[in-house]
Amino acid sequence: MKERVKKDKHGFFSNIAYVFGEVRRVDRPLFWCNIFSVLMQLIIPVLDMVITPCIIYILSDSRFGLRELILTIGGLIFVKTLAGIISTRIEARKYVAEHKLVLHYHERIYSKIMKVDYDMIENPQTKVIYDKAEEAVMNNHTPFVHMPENFCRLITGILKFAVFCFIIVVFNPLVLIALALTAGLEYLTMLYIDNYEYKTRDERIRISRKMKYFAGLSENYKTGKDIRLYGLNTWLKKSLSQLMKEHHKLFSKLALRKIASSAADLLVIVARDGFAYVYLISKVAANEITPAEFVLYFSVISGFVDILGEIVMSFEQLTKGNYSAKDFRAFMGTENRICGELAMKGDEAESVVFDNVSFRYPGAEGDTISNVSFEIHSGEKVAIVGLNGAGKTTLIKLLCGMYHPTGGSIKLNGNEQTEYDRDEYYNGFSSVFQRISVMPFTIRENVVYSEFSRDKLDRCLEISGLNKKIKGLSDGIETYLVPNVFSKAVDLSGGEMQKLALARAMYKNGPVLVLDEPTAALDPLAEEEMYQSYSRYSNNKISFFISHRLASTRFCDKIFYLENGKVVESGTHSELLSKRGKYAELFDIQAKYYKEAAVNM
Image (tube, rainbow, N blue to C red; front, top):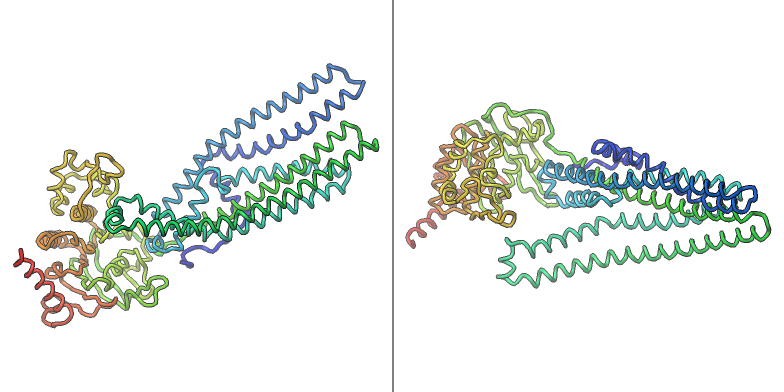
């Protein structure tokens, strides 16, 4: 996994530039809204600060009358009202645009997860990275989504800080130092909490993912039968309860640290405000400042405190957004193994070569596939057989590019897997795996993923044997599947789903045909009929038939018998029977079983 995810080379300013680039790409007006908001957020607090001192100054100076007072107050209120209207309009526009931005991020994540190598989806580390990326954009209130806004707030805060600093320095530089020290203490406590929260995120996400999985089991109708029949509800509740305790323990630790941090901040604020009041009142008592100046300086000091808090808060949120940006970009930066530029040429595969191929699952002590070598040419039919756990499905996933060899190489038409464009490589395979995916679409849409031809579809449904089922449906091929999504949908049986998958593979018509236990849900007679149909259909293809039942082997040109990830026997059906080895032993056992079953019937 480590070599598949780019190392974190994205710094703070790189991530800020990245999110601004995304904003400009998705919604350019949102980019300018963030820029103009800086000006509005600077004008409004400055007006708030000077309005009251100006009124006091005019009232206390005999040179000014009612006219000057009305003009001053009216002018300041008009400017503030106008700025407030513009600011409100900008915020409303930003709110709408941020929803659009969140949808854009989600689209990128979902597009990425569908394109990463299959073995990465199975890897727990990838799931953690995916969860963190998804958490970063779960809604339009996350620090990652708000990075542009928080950056603009930081810039606004710095500009206001510069203005207020100038006024305070003119008044007394020591006051500025005291205020800066208290703000530094607040920032340190916030930084401590943020670092702790980020360091514990992986563990909290891991537990949350488990909780989500167990909660999903309780409402999954596919697992509902086993839960009820075997009394698994007690075990399920116990497991979920244990995870909730772990989850609560982690969040309690975080909450206690946040409470301690808030208490420390409160003490700092009380000390700071008390200092400001005492100091300014003493200045008024000594006639060193006027009442108007008292209000101005107190407004500046109070505003300065707020500005420091705003800067600290903006920087804190930017820091959180920076962490989330790293998570998001780490997931988006995952690299695929098959990432060349070669395209599949023609509709036929010339050859498939396994050259001393080995494969070991991450964390496993031994190889699942060990030093497998063979060469298959166009038109040849190959059976890969063996007992459960022999490595048959893993071998096929290696062939299809779902997994990647940890040793040796795989070539298609003389080219390494990694030399192909990944989608082009996948286009070379019509595959049916043990676990069949049925999408919440119509039967037609579940079979046809390319240009639609009714004649071709009818022919594939006829060969697969699903046409009889479809003729009994009122909507025919336009019948929806997956009842828990569509109320009028139908639910196919296991055998019918396998026939649907076979029709899908035939319609795609890839030059390499791969059938991984395609008839597991069929009876022996239906299985024999299905294989005969596929034998006729696959004459000009390279075909792989994988099974632990040997009905698929008699019409194949080559048979590989796998045991513990190694090819221990190879040859034709008759050759392997004559050797009287493991293949012959398994064939005799299965033949005896079928004979006994026929007699008992």
